[in-house]
Length: 305
Image (tube, rainbow, N blue to C red; front, top):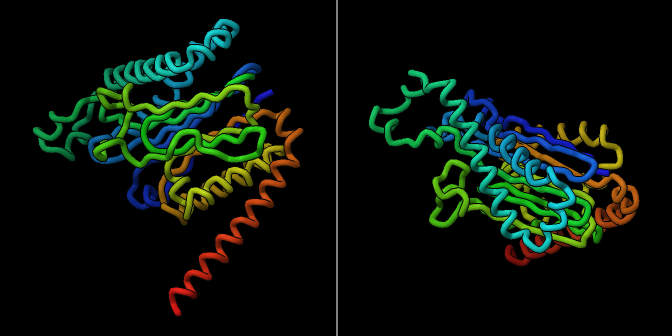
C-alpha cells in the first residue's frame, strides 16, 4: 500500500522581496500507483506568473499520468517493453495539459497594466505569452513492479530501493546546454525532458524536490544521506510531517533562502519490513560522514603546515 506527503515553503529571499512562493508540490496515492511531483516557477522578470505556472505544471502532470493508468491492466502489461516511448508520450501530454491550463488562465485573466509596467512596450511584445508562466517540473511514479520519473529543469529526484541505498536516477542539472533554462514554457520543451525507468526492484520511498533543497547542502553525499535519515522516520507519518515541515522551513530561511518543495511517496508495507535496514544505513552514513570530516580536517592541517 502506498502513502505520501508533499509540502512547499517560501524562501526568506522571497519574504524580503515581497514575492509569493514560486514553488508548487503535490502527491497522489491510489491502491495501485503513487505520484510525487514538484515544480519551481522561474520567478524572474519575464516569468511574472510563474507561481501559477508551477501550480499548473503539477496539476497537468498528475492528470497526464492518471490518463495512462486509467486502464491499469493494459498499461502495466505494455509499459515494460515500451517504456521509452510511453514516457516520452507522458511528457508530451503533460506539456499539452500545461499549455491548455496556461491559455485558459490567460484568457480569463488578461495581462494587467501593472504587470506590463515593468517592461517597455518593445520588451513586453517580445515575450511569448507562455513564458509568463515558466516553470520546471519533476515527477516520480511508483507502481507495483516498476518505478519511473520525468524531469525538465533543475531540482532532484531521489529513490531508495530495497537495498537501502539512496540514489539519484536522474542527474542534477542546474541548466540545459548553453545555459538555457529548461522549462515547460520552451517551444522545444518535449526534447528537454529527462526520464528514468526501473523494474524488478522494490521501491521503499521516492522523493522529488526543487533546487532549493539540494543547494542547502554542502555536497551531494550529504543530500543523499538526508533522504536516508528522513526515510527512517516514515513509519510515523504524522511525526514525519511535523519534523519535515520544520526542517524545510529552517532550510528555506537559513540556507539558500530559496523556496523549497518536497514530495514523497512510499510503500508502507516495505517500510515496515525494511526499517532495520534503513536504520543501519543511517548509522553507516554517519560513520562515513565523520570519516569525510576527519579526512578534510587532516588535509587542512597538512596544507597549513
